[in-house]
Length: 176
Image (spheres, rainbow, N blue to C red):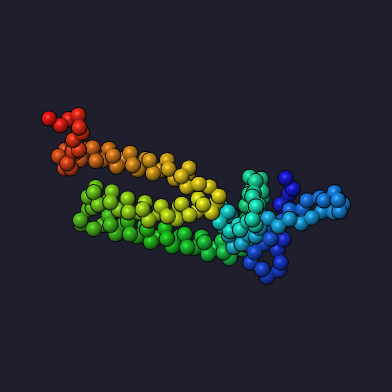
């Protein structure tokens, strides 16, 4: 596979991703546009800023070269802003957790479980969308996590049934 090159115009916020392929009939290299890359993209999530042209794909070595290029040539101000946003979010979460722990009414197990399930519901859409953007199938990536939550829920329901908190389903074999 031809090596991936980056073309960045001065003042532009994007870089063009191209490959050069030799054309034996014209005895010259042809420029093939692979896609574009936003320069303010986080190197750790470099695929979020890549927009591929129709019919183009990236190999693992090319993805690594995008990561390396962004780390070296990416927008430094954007990296600082991302770091600041992450620190603010972390601070806010820590403050909320400390406020919750300091409250005289300690949340019970059921409230914490309900909050965790609601948080998982809220994150499911963005996780599936990010998976699709990376060219992956959400079924393959998110299904193991879903199954672990489903298994835990099934165990919770069985425990509630055995303690008499929830109604127990009676199967056809158990009916008198």
